[in-house]
Length: 79
Image (cartoon, rainbow, N blue to C red; front, side, top):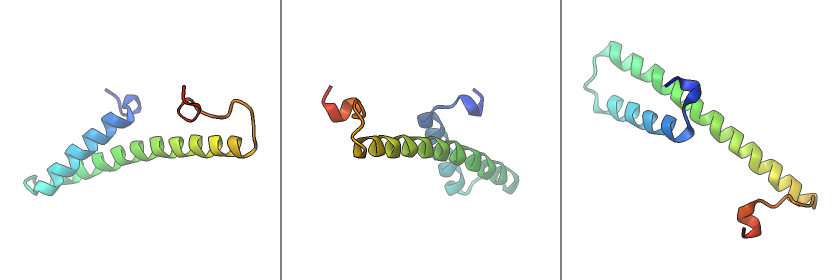
């Protein structure tokens, strides 16, 4: 699967695996560098998902503050 096809959950799970491999300290230097680079890419994917979610939340909060009809999400309206 390509990086741009990963869901947030998949990227986070892979990042956890990379962190665990690096923390174990058993990999040779070259492999550790590759793991680190992979971890940076995965962290960026997660960051983009989280930034997008935050932007959606901020937009929803702004809509609610402005009293726009239909601005409540299903979790707020109890549906």
